[in-house]
Length: 112
Image (tube, rainbow, N blue to C red; front, side):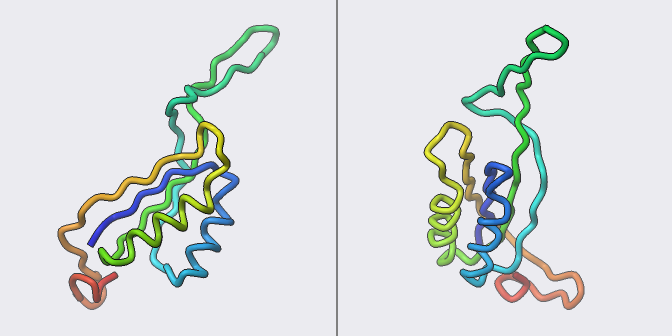
């Protein structure tokens, strides 16, 4: 099993959620987060002074999948979230040792 964590632009929340549902991916956690990458935020003016806003609002999707589903989900995320501009986000894939469904105590793939 793998955990896929995708950090994307806030305006990609609904399109990406719908694309994942259309691909029968149902278990996901979505969080609003703040961060910065290569773009390092942007400058705005407040009362005549330039202010650097270096934390950009993003949306984080977290999914735990069987290994054979990972490449397809990563493709969905990249195709749906891409704008071609700096700040489109990142996808991280990491191993998951165990999953346990609390209610039934099922383990592994059955618990996803």
